[in-house]
Structure formats: structure tokens, C-alpha cells
Length: 376
Image 1 (cartoon, rainbow, N blue to C red):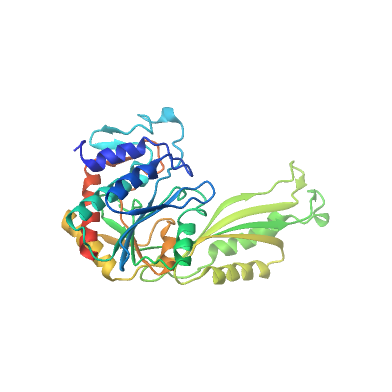
Image 2 (cartoon, rainbow, N blue to C red; image 1 turned 135 degrees about the vertical axis):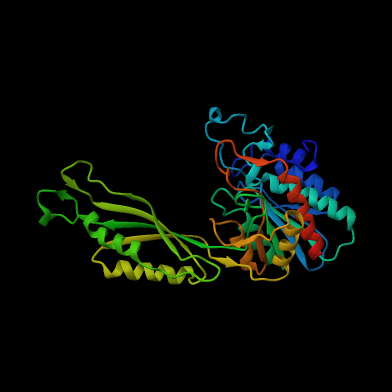
């Protein structure tokens, strides 16, 4: 098993310390393999981000596999049981930063593509890969810019499989078919600083904001729908200080996030937040950050192909979910592509001693190849 080509490639990728946005040579490794398989590989650098668009074929439909080479920082090296950038196999698991998120998926994609092309060199349509080194970061010069570039020159993607670690307890038990939207807000409440002993001479922004915060928390934004849970509101930062115990603060700063379903778009959600704030007697300023609108892939050829591939390998039909955070699917789906996410178990992602089951990586490659065979 340790000499399986997917494991060998995964180890090579982990040994490249590609902390966002540094690709650390990962895409060069992938390009060499893809060009040997007949792909036209185009590097698309934007600022300090390295992107790859690789395509084999000129016709439709286009089946694209997407992912990222960048990883989050490993944290304290002495907290790891082995070097986070030296892949190590112990007790049936392969350890290293990016093992699960998501270099195992990249290795499985490449090996699956090589095997599929060798067996079906005259496949219909086109195969493509979209790889970025900016998924774990601000994600402004990665997949978003590649999709914009493709759109400008009239290239489209019909089906997209993203290798994000979607699985929960066992490989392919969950397939993501959509994601909630994410809207973040930075709020400043202005007041008048002064001595706490003279409340008639101050305007405490904490007192002003308290009932507003309660209303935001108690608002039922929606009840969700058949595909999405209800919209959630979470405060992630709240601070205000006059600098000492007997001074009321001049300002209060709050940051919160709304994860929302297809019951909303970001413009309407912003308007609802503004309505709540305007009903209160406060002087405020807002700054918005939209990470992405919600997207959903409806039943069709792509979901059918993925379910079939999973059943053949595991004997079970996967749960179709829209849970979790955001992914680069938020940039690909608006172009009109059907998008799903299928990858390894996510229990250890972004953690110390990140790992993936060794046996799962070649199995994932088999599923990816089956998807290609089902669609092309």
C-alpha cells in the first residue's frame, strides 16, 4: 500500500511546505504529470498566488476537478508527533499538514486522470483541472480570478468535483452538493466618553448596543428549507473600553457573521440588518464582507455519477449535504457549473497531527476515475 502511486504522490506534495499563498512547487509537480497525460497547462499567477488551469480536449461537456495546494500553518512543530512537512505513516494513517485538506484529493485526482486517459484516450468532451494556492487565505486572487478569466474568453465548466474533505466518519459517507452563503459585518457604535458618575453627560455605546444585540440574536431569519438549515447569526468579536474603570467608552466595535440559506441573497440580508439597526437609537457605521452567496446543485447527471461511483466503492449511498463552511465552489457555481465536493474524512483538518487513512487515498482515486467514466 505504501508504494501505491497515490500515496507516493501525496507524500511528495506534503514535503512541499505550501503555506498560503506559497505553492512551494506543488503545481510544477502536477503540471509535469498532466502534460504527460496530454493536458494543456496554463499557469495563471495573480499577485502572490499561483493558479493552474489544465485542460485536455476542446469540446463540451467539460468535467473539471478543482482543489488547492495551499495549507494552513502547522502551528508549534513540537506539538506534532512527526514533522508536519515530512509525511509519515503510522498505524495505517498518513500524517502531515495537508494530508486531509487537501493534498490527498489532489494525488487521487492526478492518478485517476492518468488511469482514465490511458484507458480512454478518445474520451468525449474535455477534462480539466483548476488548482489554486489561495483557498485557505483571503481567496481573492485564486479560483475567483481564474473563473473570471475563463468567463472573459468564453470557457465554461459543465461539471465540477472539488476535493474538499467532505467525509464525516468514513470515506464518502457525505458528499457536499452546496454551501451556505457567508456574510460578515464589522459594526461601530459611536458614543460620548465621560465619567461614569455623571451618566447624564455621557452616551455609553455599550448600553445603546445591548438591546440591539439581543434583537439580532433573537431574530428568526428563516426556517431553512429542504436543502439548507436555518440562517444562523454569530458574534465573533465584541470590544469596547474607556481605558479605565471610571470612564465610559467612546466607541463599541462588534463583528458578526451570518451563514444563510437560499432563502436570502446578501443584498436583502444586509437590508434586514440595517432595518434592525435603524429602529434603534444609535449612531453607527457598517462595513460588509461577502465571502460568497449560497449555492446548490440539483439532482442531475453529476450527482448521479458521484452517487454511482461511491456506491460501487463503498456499497452505500452517500448523504447529500450543504453543511460546513465555505469553499471555492462559491466562485465556480455562479458560472453555471454543477458543483459537488467529495474528499477524505475531515476530522483532523487544520489540527495538529492532521492525517488521512492510507487505504482511503487509492480508494478515492478509484471513485474519481469512476466519475470520469460515468460522465465522459
